[in-house]
Length: 255
Ligand SMILES: C[S@@+](CC[C@H](N)C(=O)[O-])C[C@H]1O[C@@H](n2cnc3c(N)ncnc32)[C@H](O)[C@@H]1O
Picture 1 (cartoon, rainbow, N blue to C red):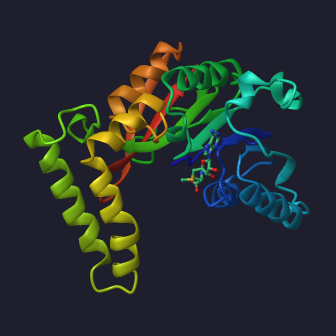
Picture 2 (cartoon, rainbow, N blue to C red; picture 1 turned 180 degrees about the vertical axis):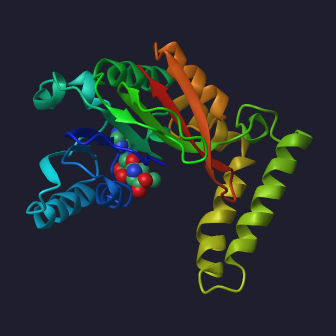
Picture 3 (cartoon, helix red, strand yellow; picture 1 turned 60 degrees about the vertical axis):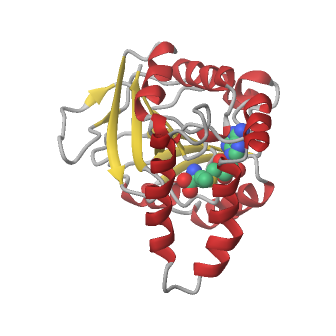
């Protein structure tokens, strides 16, 4: 996706980095020195990141690394914890499948505002190999999430026909992906079916809506709208890949 980089140094923040399955392959493709900041709340993932960066640190490509064992909310709620980066600006801030953990709308709003304030104006990249655009001289927020249609919403009447159809079609695809594989029983019985049952259990859903405890799932239009409301001057969405649950998309905000 990111196929052009400037020749000078690039500064990237990856929020909710996990074990680095996205950031490490991306580093390989970057053609210039890169300064990386990771923010990851799981100690196990954070420790893995630190040790992998330790091994890679001799690579001339890695100009600097800062790994924080924190959740995104600490970026704006507890500046003292992340004071090292509270004044920092990035060329790219990315978050792949992690902002879905900000189930409260106010947290997503704070995240988008924080990102907007911490993007600088010297990044230079073109975003899509399908429609390569002229290099843009501005920082960008790249959020990768699922594009879940309204019909998959927990807010609808549980047995409304379009909602039932959404789950029926998605689960047919999901179960089909694991059929005839050793993972079939553990995945279907340990994950897919319990999740499906919970999606049609009024008490569980009511509780998760009230406590905002489940991850947020919404359409790409809603993701884009939230980014726009935080003041990004241009917001684009870009289809990335199909997944049985729903398509993966990038929502890209330009300051
Ligand atoms: C599905 S994983 C994605 C990991 C990685 N970005 C990737 O694409 O491989 C979601 C990640 O978000 C992290 N996460 C959960 N809550 C978070 C929060 N409040 N702030 C930042 N990251 C969070 C999890 O610890 C986990 O590493």
